[in-house]
Length: 436
Image (cartoon, rainbow, N blue to C red; front, side, top):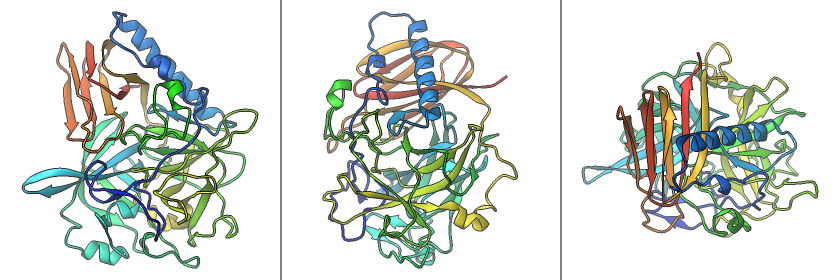
């Protein structure tokens, strides 16, 4: 992921395909159709009308809603419509006068203008890890890297000013001390505001539905051919994935590499006899992924943030049983975080969304009202492979933005029939409008 491999781990590094110096890990798990059964919705241009495609988006949204509320399912589901505060941070470095994507991370809104992610997403430069918050902010590159934020339900935002780094931050790639915090949390400020967006912070507890949300690379240990993917091949990062998780562990016996403020979840590829009980692990661009707890009210509270994984015996960052993902426990840093939070819990944004995954090559129409249409295009990860080409057109013509080399497209649309074309690979589509 961008969630750091444990210091000393022999990780494979790609300098171009996934960003300069980002460490490659693999999200490996068994594929279960009940948790990830979307190939029947990978549409091709076959002359079907726009209503069919709209109905498929609605059906996908309803499947995602059921998955989020199903406390017994620890599988995973690609979804953008259920946790609207989750987003993707993309870092850009200028080289030879050209701004180039360097890496990306995941994160979550904790207020209408504040985005929480891992501090190391701001405090690493290629293979250089700044040891702590002071070294990070004093580095010559700290103010020279620019960032954009992408939210499937809202679109693309610039980051205003410099990011805030927790003053206790210590790089988990350099030092882990069981008696000290790593405080791997940082905050970016949006150039605009997303009314009603944010997430409250709480302590972990029993009898809740724990969900991890990330935008990292997608890979499957086996069984992927049954749903149109390939096993043991990573896919480009950017699709939003929700996965059910057990309660994080905090005792030193279960989490031997823990810092004072981190907790862990063990990776398990073996399903229970009753259904998909396997867990997922962290991938490239999953750093900063929020871990949320949902109680009977159906409102999620933020309990953790993805930071690093262990042990060092894992080769090439492949997931294996007994691999542990580590999360910063956020209630331990509530005093620092409260300066960035809203005065009230605003974790239920006022937007209605539909969504789906489309397979390319394809072309199809959607009838939409005024709202936001976004798409993330991705394909199998091959060195130097570009993102699939996308066109979005309509009358009136949608006002669209894209972010170079990320597969991201975000359009403001009026009441129109919108035609979407995807040249290859896959596209995660989201359409949202304000509630009336």
